[in-house]
Length: 308
Image (tube, rainbow, N blue to C red; front, side):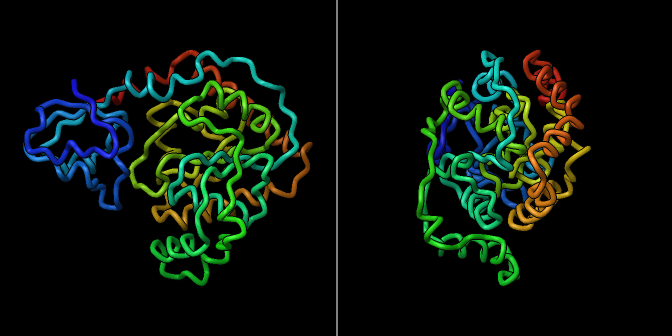
């Protein structure tokens, strides 16, 4: 089977094979669950994907028969940490950690808001890209109408946004990255996962949340709307509902969703490390369940229930 990778230029070809595989996230989906690459495809095709497109996507493309390739997703993304089973002991010294690799508008939003809230500790948060403050301002304006309100929650200065903060990030090399990040994870109360294409509207699950699963940590993701509900329903991982209000997960607008996430976690920011540890213990059963769910590969059985 032919594999097509970003930027998917082959899809402009009128003579595409009847069956092929599209790798990665396809560049995301708009609010109407349309995708610029899928919209180019003419005729009836069977397409293998690394994710399970929701019903609204399937309805938009009745000429395309989508096959969710679970084994491909596992081998290319989820299986990344199966050999990592010893992590440092929990030792809280920091509130939030977040690791932001390749540049994307969603990661610009996340790093900017973290710094504005004074949660971007440069010893625990990375930003492997730089851009101007005006680019942040323009992106906010493109997503919300009441900009005077939302500008208050983002650092739109060049002083922060034109800086790079890195821990030696090696893209796709998770065995190296987990060793570089394990202490930052176990020393932080909360890992805010910087998911791929957070401004898309279709959940796309990558390996990033597993950094916390395998180090037995707490995490929340800045991801697509419905992402947390998606990993609970289709992947079988438990959410930390005794601590966190997941209302933000249902908010469609990416700016509004991010600000709601930040205001929700802000109540934990002034607690002591000892109090963070007490809260962590409230979720110990869910944390241990998720750890075992991953290393037993039970998540694969959950996914396969919904693979087509």
